[in-house]
Image (tube, rainbow, N blue to C red; front, side):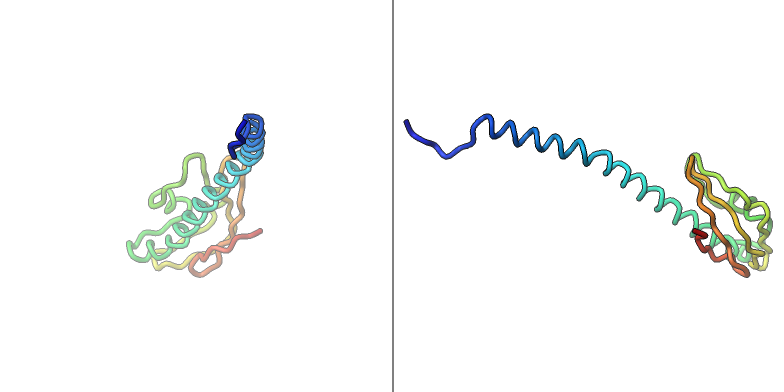
Length: 125
């Protein structure tokens, strides 16, 4: 008999089982990581849009609550909403009263603090 330098069927089977176990453990974690990255990217885009509203109000001469301006000029991701934005007023000269608001995305809620006079977004915890 000749001994050819190869792998046996058992060795290949064991390697496949180990690979399947690693994949079964890693797949849910990768899915959660992907969801978290997508949420943070969408949140950053929304924060950038909110921060741009005072400049947009100045450029267009539009004024109103942050809620009104956001509904007219921003696109929220599906299932997202703003709470407390109706208490924050942006004047047509671009000045903002500032205040706290929440971004609600399903079961996740992020508190944002908007600093006057131009509503710069600071994440509040």
